[in-house]
Image (cartoon, rainbow, N blue to C red; front, side, top):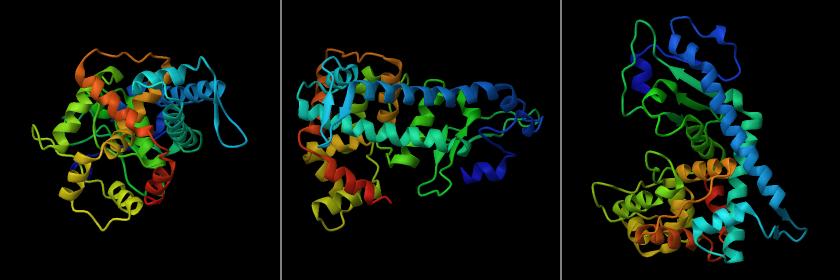
Amino acid sequence: MIEYLRHFKVHLYSYGKQVQTIPACFSYLRQNLKRFVHEVELAHEYVKRALEIFFDEIEETLDGTLEIARNSSIKRYLGNVLQTTNNTTLTQALLRLRYYLININNYLNHHKANIIFASSRTDDQPFSYDHDIPLGVTLPNDEGKRVVIMVDNDSVEKQYPLHATLLHEISHIEAGAQDFLFLPGNGNTSDATSILKQFYDAINSGNGEALPYEKTFVKGYENFCNLRPLTPMEFIVRVRADKMLQANIIMDNADCIAQLIVDIGQGRPYTRNDNSTLRRIEELMAALCCRNLQQMFEKVIASRL
């Protein structure tokens, strides 16, 4: 990314500024600005709609428990995703979802001006796609909480919508989500089979995949379990043996968070393919809430602050 910025003339447009602030030579950015702004508003609309549904259907009581409407669409959606009707399981899943919704909504309410559209595409400098340049970028511990969208790549990476990219990046900068796995190209929740295949390839070194060694996540795990520092290989060995750790990795994944929010915000039902691979991920994801994970989750988040 740094090399890209050094070698190309790049314009950085901050959300909310007038289109006239964009130099005329950056015609692609100027001509598509309304569409890019719409994607920001669409992301916010999905978050607000998901929150509205959440609080319409779910109420927190004075003792801190959740009172869930019997016909709750979110509970039904998560129940289908997790393949469970267990109330304890679903309550913990709802608490986790609420955490992300509140934090991402807070960002979009107060920090939209920190969303930056970056473009190097000019009349004299034609677009050249570089696979190593991501569609969205954030910097850990960035006090400015900036989210940079490389809008030139949007014309190539249409399989992953810009509004989903924004939710993905905001979940990093505002709520500490990680990049362990990436959703399949069309970004549908029903493609969870591909996520699980990537995950098992990664922890078993198959098909050239490798699970990233996310230091902040690993540090939180070490602290929670009172372990000495683990090497990457020792961590992988533990991941292979610990279904709960596998579930936490999957559910702390930015791509999954973004897609859950879009699905719920759109009112999209979860579609279950009847095959053994998807049943395995449903069992794995259900393990997330087999016991109360709030303490571990808080410690993982605290380790990132």
